[in-house]
Length: 465
Image 1 (tube, one colour):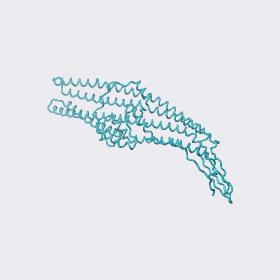
Image 2 (cartoon, helix red, strand yellow):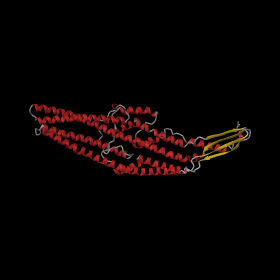
Image 3 (tube, helix red, strand yellow):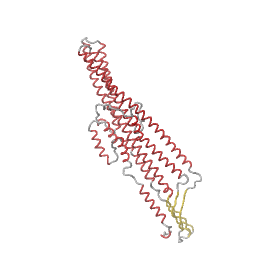
Image 4 (cartoon, helix red, strand yellow):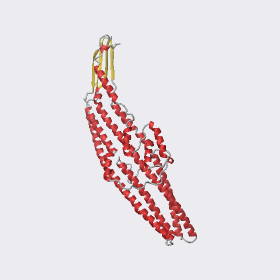
């Protein structure tokens, strides 16, 4: 067997230099402390003023924070905070950050060196070839490859941040629907109790001959309808509560309590111009699309650079040919692909097509964002005016009519039947007010989301799932 002597190797200077460069590059390719979640948390905090559960160390504090939030009636912002702390689907989305960062770190690391050896022997003659090679081309293209993966990592951060905002939007919608259902259920119970009392009164007055059979049947019918409305309200309250429980990540919907009514309408409306300016500064889908286009542009440049040669192996080698005691011949081995059949044009065309595709998608996203903001604002404005109209005009008017009827009833100028008929009209106006306020807050949540990302999850009435 050949014995390797120190003097038989070629100069070690290129190898040492290569090792130093490799070490330096490898030192740059490391994982961050929390996989990019600090950036996600910062982006979310700018738009929601909420915190996001991040890692296992934060699980304990998340549990404590959850218990604190559940100790009192759940407001809309508290519901959003619960969702960000407990929604498992959101936490699963955080894994995309780890994947993107792993790709980035991998792009910053050189492939392992390659050792090859050829050994032949015939009638006392030997041929031994040994080489130690390294893909030099990957070293040359490494900065460009890292830049591509860095862009993709940044894009993933924006996509995860957008996922957080979408969850916040869904939570707001679920909370508004659940509280409105609670309010409607409470009112439906009051109406049913009043209708029951009126039906009993009508029955007794009919027995005494003071009311006609038609009037008694009318009150009985109203009571039957009220009971049906109450049952429907109970079902709706249960469905909306369960939906809220799913969004905020709680398996038991009895763990939280809700306020008895929706917040009052705001005193003033948002301005459209201000909303549009805010949207184009904050919409994460636009920022993510721009990052994607930048990454694909770099990918296109990399494809053009490597279209002819993407492997270039170089390294020291030594050869023994002849008798075993003879000296090794020392030199350098060099290997690369010959672009005889594949000139890389297909790869470049593919990269160009993907880049063009991203450009067109970005342009369409800009158009979508413009129309979504205008549509969300129009819905917000109309819902605000409708709720204001019901609150300032219809409800006070119905209340005044009822008061006047009570005065006339006390003065023996109005029959009990007419007073009860007017009370039934009052029921309709209150239900209309609850629905109007609910639709406004749903539209407000839709407008908020339109300034931060796509509102595809909303239906034509501005409501979520």
